[in-house]
Length: 154
Image 1 (spheres, one colour):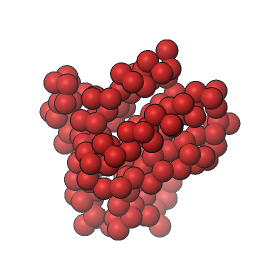
Image 2 (cartoon, helix red, strand yellow):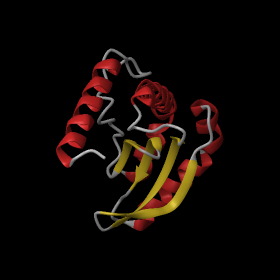
Image 3 (cartoon, helix red, strand yellow):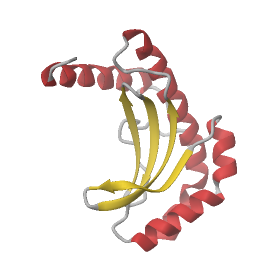
């Protein structure tokens, strides 16, 4: 078991290494990308990466304060499910009422590899590969369809 300080150091080292490994990868639209803080251009919609003992995940979190807007975005994403699944290469887990974060109900779409363990050193390269693959695949999908979400919420 790692102490709080050791876990902080491990997390910092992991995400710095990940940032360096993907920094030269351009978005599918040709632009330089901050992959760690993926820009969705839609208020209260986020792309998050998570790693822990239970796996590695790429999450698309929909969390507007207004539940009506959250529902509209969710409905649009379900309509894009087939094309998104084809691009991602694996089925997503869809949870319209995932959990409360910061007092808000969020909807989450996630792609996960639960065979990976962040605390096994031999899994770290596999976690990196998984996250890079899913993030760049998601980017190809998102750059194609993000204008729909932007227009829905503006």
